[in-house]
Length: 282
Image (tube, rainbow, N blue to C red; front, side, top):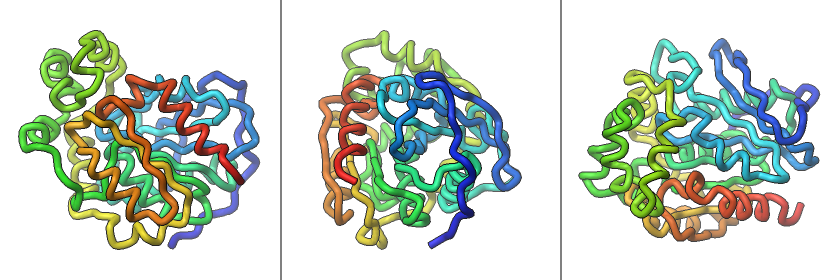
């Protein structure tokens, strides 16, 4: 377990507005975004999916009504410059903890979507005293997951969908499922928010998870945990959510009638589930 320095005075801002800025943590420049809400409960630190700049999570962040949310572009993605060397999930967990301390919070709730769900698990394990509650969305326990089909995995092997909008339109329904199968306009809106993905940065994200698994220590996670899975998720089959919910001691599973990106296609419903969980009890 890793300790973190005591927090400074907590960051404040006008409720409902985004504060976006560049900040250095342990020598790494990070593009961060904070959506303040003025609530007294701990803020939500969100770890985004692979290749995803923070703006892709904006629909969910805007749907949160009682939770201050913090998110940052992973090094090599969006407006966060690429580090000199590859990193591991423990590195990103440390950056997240450093960011929380720099912003002045003594405690946070953590959430992760897809690839970022692995980082959120690592954060909760590495900083148990900093992480109060945990939300895992459309994610799995690392390389030991029940995998997607080879055709889906092949489409995810490169960041081409982030740089080629026509390609994204062709494959979005196959890899994301759910609402993307029925409403082509969702693909265009999602693709319009994509920017800043670089080949080497994407490769670093793939390498970060190579050989990583949370299975040996999921039983040690003491945080109340909400696991969210989509019924029609080609990328992370819902059996992975059931595995997480079974192995994390204090976890509950909620299924959503959508695909992999239900945080984007059903932001109000997802935000309501998350906030109900975060405000349930002490």
